[in-house]
Image (tube, rainbow, N blue to C red; front, side, top):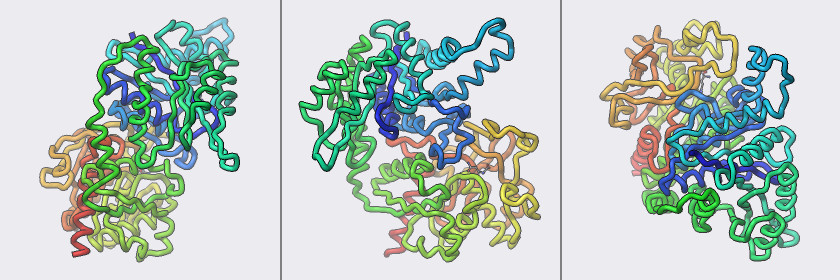
Amino acid sequence: MTKHIFITGGVVSSLGKGITAASLAMLLKQRGYRVAIQKLDPYINVDPGTMSPYQHGEVYVTDDGAETDLDLGHYERFADLTCSKNSNYTTGKIYSTVIARERRGDYLGGTVQVIPHITNEIKRAIKSLDSDEIDIAITEIGGTAGDIESLPFLEAIRQFKHEAGDGNAIFIHLTLVPYIKAAGELKTKPSQQSVGILRGIGIIPDILVCRSEVAMQDEHFNKLALFCNVTRDLVIEEIDVENSIYEVPLELAKQEFDLKVLKKLHLESRELDLTAWKKMIEKAINPTQGEVKIAVIGKYISLKDAYKSIYEALEHAGIANDLSVSIKMVESENLEKDPSCAILNQIDGILVPGGFGDRGIPGKINAIKYARENDIPFLGICLGMQCAVIEFARNILKHQDADSTEFNEKTKYPVIDLMLEQKNISNMGGTMRLGAYACQLKPESKAAAAYGTKDISERHRHRYEFNSAFADELEAAGLEIAGISPKNKLVEIVENPALKWFVACQFHPEFKSRPMQAHPLFRDFVNAAKVNSREVKS
Ligand code: GLN
């Protein structure tokens, strides 16, 4: 039987509920439990796929092609799990299922209501994680206690715990204990109030996890225990970590957070071995091989979360190479005004990530031209690959008008064009080429050298593709097609073999990178950047 953990948040958003949930999943998994994890998001979009990264950060894509919340990236990275469509439900997704059922006539004669129909559907979503292969399912509830839109979710988990019975489901509440500088004091009142809100809807947290900037004292633990109805040992402190988010599980383990969770769930403790994880953190914090500077040329740079998995994958690549990766976030529009790319002067490697729409494209193309002409290691991802093909067609083939039909429908040289199966699609939500697809690598390519195999599978999220009508012309001029999807022969990777390391892929390798297993393309890209910087300096 699968046991359930529900994680709610209080006081403010952005407390790091996703990282806490991911850390718990990682610790329980290290103890030998089989763990599944999901997030319930109270907003009305059916999934975040139609939202701008400015609204909700990066859209994380699963193997099975779900467009999901970026917290799923934390889950997969921390606990090395594979999430699925069942790992993210929104209010929109829940309602659309219930409304479709109502239209089908499943409730004929009945009034369809939030309770029980919506709450039942939420409970079904939670139970979708249940299986003989899963011991513990963790469900993170998005939003903050007190939000109007999260009420049905809170009511559903209240019912769920009541029905599951003692020891089969628990509530963990993550809350903020703010430090008031002027008074020089930590304040527990907001947490008391947040627990009060939950109590008002029938939820009594079993464990309290308190986010704070500075260490809490006995008086704070005691106060929180007394007013929030938990024993002193069930108040856990989660202070901001200094160096790496991957330290969070260690801090929680020190307080036996995971052991206390297991006890509440009536499960045995089992051994916990964090040696490898600690080694990884040691490497992350104290690399011995120096620093490498990577520029990320984005169009949503002002929001750090917009490229979350890219930044994480670069950090993992640093760990794998024993290097510190210093990331320079460059707004591509700034390179439009400065085609000479003077700000990339000191950079060892250039990465152009994915994106949508024509804003910022000329700047991305200028950066790629700079990388190609100065032989600076380059990694292009999705839109980054498409821009690399456009740059090559414009500047090497001299097709000044070459473009993607996403930016110029009338171009004479549509080197990037809408995929055939996309031509008649009118709905925007969930209709891109999504999820894992196989890819075959050319044996002598940089990509094949990185992966150490010629058959790979990577995650996709795009509508446009390399236009094979231009393949011969581009290849004859030196752009190598290094990866192809075996089924419909789509071009998945291009390389420039005349350069030291110039690789661009149509898929998103960043989603499969893990702290203890850097993605091969990121790993080799960062290594090439380091080799390049040494050569330049010597
Ligand atoms: N906008 C491009 C497409 O739809 C690239 C997408 C991306 O970078 N994820 O094909």
